[in-house]
Figure 1 (spheres, rainbow, N blue to C red):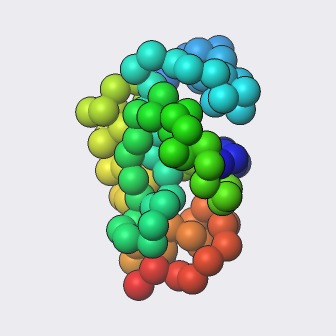
Figure 2 (cartoon, one colour):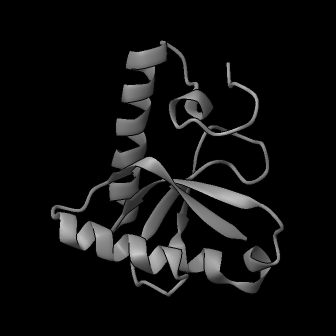
Length: 112
């Protein structure tokens, strides 16, 4: 599985330096303790999913033949929940619906 970090990725990191460091590690597929990612759903159920980043480095996920869009990164599960909340608030403000695909300009059908 490959990761594609969207251009307008959300984060709960306080500094730009720390945020960029985490993005580099994600791009290189290096293990990062305590890092969570908010992604598009893997199996067409739901709007977004939260994964422990290190879980996605396991052989089961590595064998997947798709590219997974990463919408947000956080240093805890609770932080990832806040990132999901922030994303949904912004998407509803812009589209008045949970149209995540259009908001992040990724392919696929619109969610209604």
